[in-house]
Image (cartoon, rainbow, N blue to C red):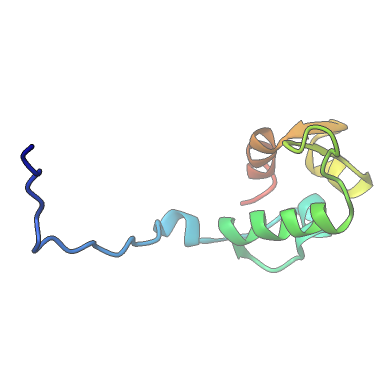
Length: 97
């Protein structure tokens, strides 16, 4: 059996963060009740949102991909009691400028 040739001189390039994700966004009043009032990059907003969800036990016990909204999250989720984690990011995008 012949071995496959590999490139010895190839170096991995370090990933550069996407500048669009690093731009600070201002949360509106509904989202500010959960993540704070200071402008934050989109990545930090998502991180703080997950911290809140885990701290307050809002993640569904059976289907871990779903988030059960409490009073503060109902305003962010436009009145929906349960949303998937994928739908959550789309709904949060409407609350930043």
